[in-house]
Image: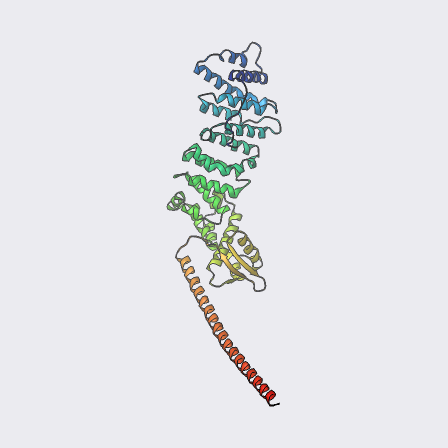
Length: 420
């Protein structure tokens, strides 16, 4: 889908195009003896210059294009290109487009039929003006066709252009939400992380999204993200908090990194995960990783014993290193493992949960410890500098004495030489 070519160049006169297409339609869909052929229908009207009659012809061509599903592999794309070219002369293209898109929802029987349909839809997308809102409907059809034929990988590279396209098409918030939601649903199986981002965009693009959609966003975030600040910031999610929604309480508990609180919540609401369609095992694992990061963030020492981690997330001591590695891979912590000391040296920890009084107290304590450590370092540096100065003064004194002795020896040697 490019914007380089905005029309299809087809040689000939429009009347010839229509007659050729009518002949092809009759070949693909013969009528019974005595019935009117499509070519005859066209010939009766083609020379009539009345606009209404011309629009009847365009509408008939749009309807009849369904027979192109039986066209040969060689003729399928070129025949549809001819249909598109003819219909660009219609003043009612907006009404005719849904008919064409419906006809293209069925692919030809040959093996690469779905790919050819994508090619045809792409051609249609490109012949429409860059700013035409009709491109929106065509792109939706492209997405659905790619999904049905397992060719979505051909479309994903184009998704980066979607924000610009939506502005060019000047679509409303509802249409914007719909297309992002469609993309999220289509790519959820192949790229769940990316699907979550499009779902987030779908929800955030509407000032009042459907409550079920917001709950779906929260449930998806719990399964595919470790950062929830953007989710909490949405007004629609804040509305869930006002309603004391169970899914919001789950989000709040998970994001806090409190594994014990999570277990208590799940025990009290046994059906919560099932109703939200959340994988219990996956979420349990993610909460443990968040809890591990929370333990690291609250540590007042530069290293944490494995035993503290094992106790905090309720795992055997021998599994601690595996969980630490998972937390590192998740980007929540950076550190060095010591099997000898059975401890984790912390280099960096991402914040876990919402920042409240307890978190500020932790920061304050760490700053106090840091200031104390800096003072100790400064004292050591000061003592080292003073000792170095004393050593330098001592060496300078020794060098001066040595030089004085050398001078005295030289004078004595000179005196002995003169006496001789």
